[in-house]
Length: 308
Image (cartoon, rainbow, N blue to C red; front, side):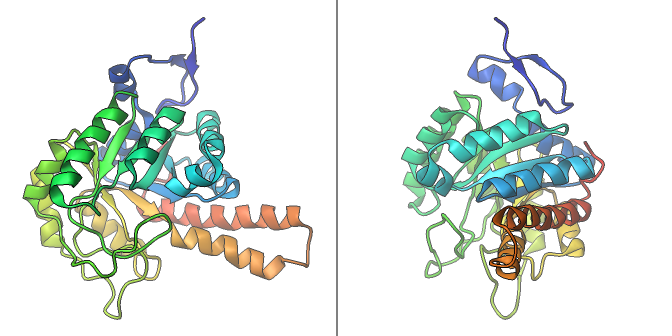
């Protein structure tokens, strides 16, 4: 019996690849972000904590005819095994536009291996940045190979993007280390596909001065490795990263942008306004609509609207 895939980059059906190398070549998340880089736009990677966020992402992508990534934290595996992952993968498979599923900030080798073996992820961020450099490089190499053998692409973070976010070890007290072109080259040599440089961006809230982004540094990193890997923007806090700043980051080579805070805030806002006033099904529907609206305007800002 021949198996088929249901969501390639063009949405067509075809034989499902079987070997790790063949799966890597056909990896939909890689194709989605590569196309964005070539087209000088960026893909919204929407952090999803529940099924409503998954639905909101897919519905926004279909409404805007935009590619997208559904992004889960390791918490989703620790909390619910593969249930949310497989729901996300099914939603991506059934979508009428290209959508991939990616794990953000996987900091445990055990969780990475478990997640890769569950099936459903197109990409996994191998984040060993809380280890010293020697162990970081050793573990990253091992885990990149493990994922690649299963057809899963990988993302790594040279340097350290300080701050804290759900599922990420709190590193507020660590010295901030910005990525250098030389560090970027070392990580590219591991076989990664996406690289998240630290150039003044942080996870979570910024300090009173706001983002102090080192664009000349980002330019040097892009010049050094941009021909081989795609750059990913972390720390795009909604208080600062509007249309203009996001598009500036894209002009420096960013092709994937993680969207987290404003989507979660939309969900919480509706819950606070409607709890106890309407049926729970109505709350869920309105939460999904609110999150969809946030994803949609980010697609406009990132210029991915109409690219599917």
